[in-house]
Image (cartoon, rainbow, N blue to C red; front, side, top):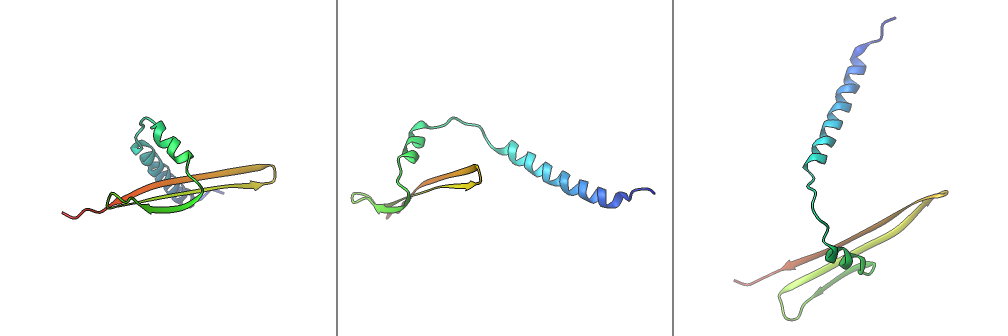
Length: 92
C-alpha cells in the first residue's frame, strides 16, 4: 500500500518554514564584544524593582532583577534576569 504524500509534504513545509525563520533570526543577531562594566553593574543589583530620580537632573532611573532556581528531580534551572533603564525628560 503506497504512503500518502500530502500529510508528509504539509509537515515538511511547516518544519522547513520554522527552520528557515530560525536560521534568519540567527543570522540577524550581531556578534559584538561584552562590556564588562555593564556586566558588573547587572551582577551588583539587588533583587526586586527600584525606581528613583536624581535631584540634580530631570531623569528617572529604574532597575529590576529576578533570580530563581527551579528544580526538577536531580536537575535544575537557574534564571537570572536583570535590567536597567533610564527615562530622561527635558524642557526645551
